[in-house]
Length: 514
Image 1 (cartoon, rainbow, N blue to C red):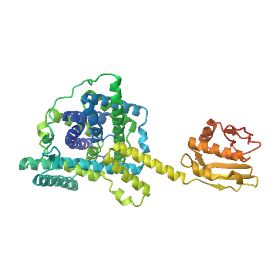
Image 2 (cartoon, rainbow, N blue to C red):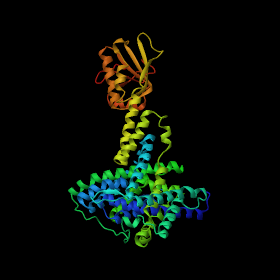
Image 3 (cartoon, one colour):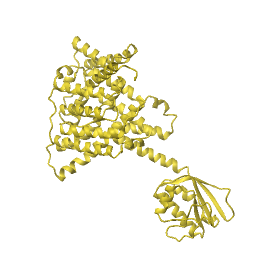
Image 4 (tube, rainbow, N blue to C red):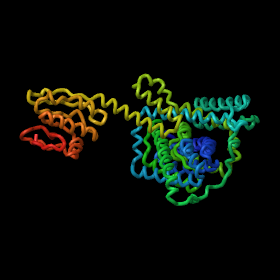
């Protein structure tokens, strides 16, 4: 909304930040429990990571903090080695992320195909939905969990419905006030003034605390510490960047603007380094809170900064007020996020896209729900690459040129020559039935890898054993370089063989200049 006056823009950013800050509290507390650390460790991470990335990140409007994707990896580290090892791991994780950004590797996210993006978005929506179901459970007598009693469950569902109704209806009358914040305030007022008995943020844990203090993690600086920390740090760094960069791409599409991937990598890394020294569990981009922020109209860094500062204010001064917010109100907000995050259009187009793309979408969504986002994306990219290689390998063929004569046959090769297509390439040629001189025109093809080089060399050997010569025409500079490094090409003699750039006579054999 670039034409809005600056005061209106500040108002929108401030209200969006307020909405996000309220939604951050229960998530940070819940993810701290998942990781097996005190609630304040999650809240400190949400504050520090959110503030640093909002100030320095590559995507204005994106919200970062403690996330479940990282928490599920951290729990093993904390359980086996203690919380101090978590802090040093978060610091190393941040260093790795800064290095990736400094080396300009953030653009690798472009390698994620669109079906994988859709699967990621849909899977994440399902994960957010399933995470909210934990709020409907209470500890059971046998140490497990059971659903809330019917009366309490009915009350909570009713409050969630009211929250979602407010969020849905309010924008029809005015867009000057964030609908999500209105839903939280309305339901909080109903519960507080109506004396309704329902779970609140305070039932999760007290969020009261002091300003985070600086401290160097209390771990021995030894090879054993490195052995413990590095594997977790690399995994956490990868998960954090994948989730952050995919969220960045998603917001780019919604706002029709362009974020800076490498800058975001460095900002995420810097935020994790800082939070590790200040007793936080680290974090990355949060798609749910980011969507709340964007849907509330935020487009600047200001909303994220305000959300982080408000979160610190809650910890220091206003914990008693925030702890009275009904869990149902925040669950209702997250259900709206789920509806807005899920790509419903993918259900309509699933029959119109190639079967492989549809299966990749479903696979990535399933793996996201079963494992985590990073593994799902990696699996999706690998499967997409294999499908592409398979399809590309099937479309390689030759046609005989009109320039052929009884003593010289010219073939034009179509398709790409690489590891998956070498078998088909080999079966296209029959040296015994060809004349003395055979030319392969590569103007519509290209040699991509070592497997392709070996296929050309092997074909040259076949023609050599048959007492015939193989020539290549219109090789790209890249192909010439690859074959030149393999020491199997010689420059053609323009006087004797005009128009032909290189000739191949087989690996290790002598060249006759043709």
